[in-house]
Image (cartoon, helix red, strand yellow):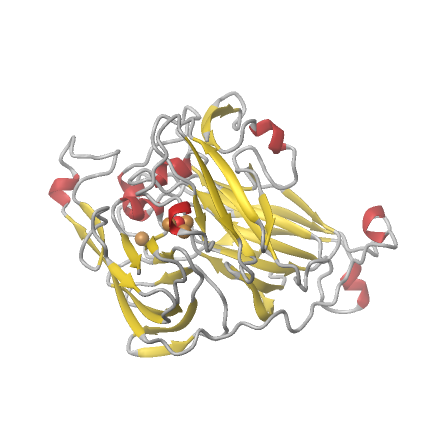
Length: 466
Ligand code: C2O
Ligand code: CU
Ligand code: CU
């Protein structure tokens, strides 16, 4: 990680903090624009060694979001890498760990800043027996950018700290509103790597797509005919996007068409007082997508004999077993405390964080010297995560994937409609989400709200696994 300058808006230079030596070396790749870390593409069974050289002027770590890496290799805030120091992260990827992950810094109190200055990148772990291995793959790494008028990355203001930062720009693979040409049916991996922006993915013409995977890999069977999918900060999904419309006669399937991939409005009940913040791009566009199905004679590549344009999606992707009956319970409660007088007292900030604004877990803010919860290795647990605040918070647990069991609100309990491996679970105001989970390694794990400003303000706990 080190500073780099880029000309992102014409005539202004923006300094980012980036992973990788030379951002221009990756900017031409179809996956990584200049402000996305390099793609790490590995397989189950691989032992991975990644040397992290901290070229920043502040401590940092690399956290392997969602991956079952040993606790001391997971970039916890209690294992900082000092400025100028090098740490080699080393882990082996177990069978069953295939999925779509990402990496980002996790240092105490400055995670949000390091991410919004550019530090984040994708990791894919592949399975030997992936039923979709032959599908052409496309990657959309969504991040958020807030610039000041002079073209520099803006620091967080009070509203950013309270609501979570949402800038004027949404980037896909590090660029604004890229053009995508889909000439064959494709498997998309989509990451929401923004600090706080909830992305409700949809095509502006209402076209349908299928979901085949979540954070921790494939579903049991495709969820067909979706017109939208919510990705909360930190969350990933695998989709099937078809080149043809899939509707009507054969002609409609092969006619070229276009649509705007959009982040539709999602009301996450942000707190009031949003005046003064910059208005979002009213188009809410993520990317312009052109669909040119293979039968279009102009598409030489897709109509060549050895490329299959329309594929048959298997109805069974894999089996996800239940974790079994939980034998322990854990309770996590999100709450908040605002002391308006302290918030407006000048000079009372820590790393630019306003005083008097606390986001709490089980009644306390994060304390590096305190264990919040203790779990036993190999024990199946039922966690209840309750939101006693007025806004959504995306819950995240390190070290393992979990399964959402049910959601309860207004006295009504709704079982999760399908089984999936996840490491993110959105919790709405007044809601309780129950997840089944099991840790397999001894050591300390973090759990927190993945609105990074809330995490830095203390909405994080330590789970000690014994
Ligand atoms: Cu993606 Cu603890 O983080
Ligand atoms: Cu994580
Ligand atoms: Cu939060």
